[in-house]
Length: 351
Image (cartoon, rainbow, N blue to C red):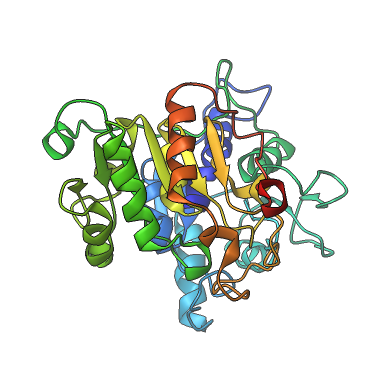
């Protein structure tokens, strides 16, 4: 979901049409895995969404069989798609998908590849040579779209955006609130549940109303975090209504997970408990006021680990609930930096 939301500015650029014929908007089909399908449907500029589980991206990966490949090839051929812009992350290759798209008859393909692409790419960007790898993923994707000849329309600031956001007053009631989203896709990116619960108590003690969010499989977690008095929306929102909940919040507390990017897409400040297993310069919430919490120089840095490789999970477990609440107060007071600035928390500085 986060990957898809970060591709949003690039999607809008492609939809705008090729410069100088920007007066002819493109009909854009967004191809993504099923985990990103709901987010893709919310992107401005995405006229259609087609879901296909990529065997070289998904984890666990589906078997790469002839029928599985044919499903994508047949769809692309029957849709008469003539051009593709492949938006990969810094550690992914566009070439397997480019091969299938060529077999489907796509005439022009743009992508970023460290490997020789031969006839698979018409426009090839070389990561680390044609652009820096140390940049936000949203800007990387937009750069790939620009290399294909697509630009954002005049007045588009290039931030994350959703096509629409619902009114969720029936869920959250009236009056200001702070959202706490304690779940994470993998254990290496999770702050302890009792730390979250303590932060909720402190926020309430400081006079904030707190709304706790989570998916259908996280209701036990959200109940623990919400305690007896916070509003527990665990399992009660889909992605669209969650966007509405995020949009109404004064700030969102979450880890490096999809809802962090959802909050950014609706313009809400984020206190992000960010494990450095991936680099914050690339994956921190983009384009909104940000407080980045966690030791960004911990031993797990850049490992891309799903389970913490360091005993005690020090990069996040060492962040206190009091620090998180202080970060929220800065965000709501308008004194935090935007997401182009990364805070680095080191234990040595606190001694």
